[in-house]
Image (cartoon, rainbow, N blue to C red; front, side):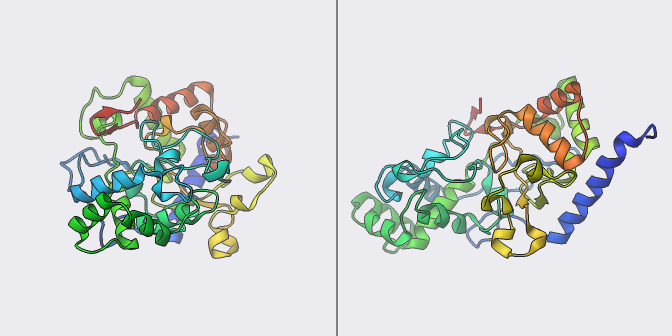
Length: 340
C-alpha cells in the first residue's frame, strides 16, 4: 500500500455517499403548512454543520397544549402510557432501552430515536415513511404494540374532558378534530430544540468553546468522511444512507429481520434494501444504545462500527476517543437546562 492509501478508502466512500445523497434528492424539513422556519442566524463559521437556532417561532398556546397531550396517557388505548414514556425529555428524548415497551408490556422491534430536534429532520422514522411530524405521530398511536389506539378514539376521549374541550376551542375555534390533535403535538415537538451546545458556540465564533482534543476529533470527523452523511443543522437527519457501504454490516451481524430492510419495506425497490434515514448526531452522547437495532451499547462502539462498515477502516484508540470527545460537544440545551 502507498503512503497515502490510509485515506483512499474514506475518500472514495465519501464521494459515494455524496452521490447517494443527490440520488435520493432529500427535501428540506418544515414541509407542512403548519411548520415555521427558524429565524436566520447571525454569521458563523463556514462549516458543513450549522448551529441550531436559539429560538423558533411557534404558537405558544399550541406548544402548551401539545406538551400536555405528549405527557398524557389518554393517548393510549388502556390509559397507561404516553409519548413521553418512550421519549423522556429528561433523558435525551429517549428511554434508554434497546426496544421500547408499549401497552400491555409489549416490546417494539426497533430502537426509538430521540424526539429532540426532530422538527429539523427531512423525514421521520428510520425508514423515512413519514414526511412530517403530523404524519409521524399516527404510527405510534395506531401501532398495537405502542399506544394501540386511533385518532378517532382519542378525540372521543378528549371531548369528555371539559378542560381539553375548552383549550382546543380557544385555539382552533372548533370542536376537537383529529387534525387538531396532530397539529398540537407536532407543534410541541418542533419546540424541542437543543441549541447552544459547545459545538454551536464554536460555530458562532467562540475560539475557546472546544478544547484541543475535541477540535482534533471534529477535524478527524471531516477528514475520514463521516461528515458526508452527518452534516447540516442536525448533523444528519437530512438524507438516506446505506448501512454497510464499505463492509456488509448485516452479514457480519447475522439474524436479519424484516425491520433491517429499511426503506425497502416502504418502496419495495431493491436499491432501498438496508437504506435508512441517517440519524441526527445531536445529543448523541445521551441516546445510547445506538443504531436501529440497538447493537452498539456505547458511543465508542458506535464510532468503531461506523468506521468499519461505512468507511472501511479501523480506527486507532486515540482517533476513536477524539471523535467521541467531539460528539460529546453536540449535547445542547433544552429550555435553559443543560442536557446531562
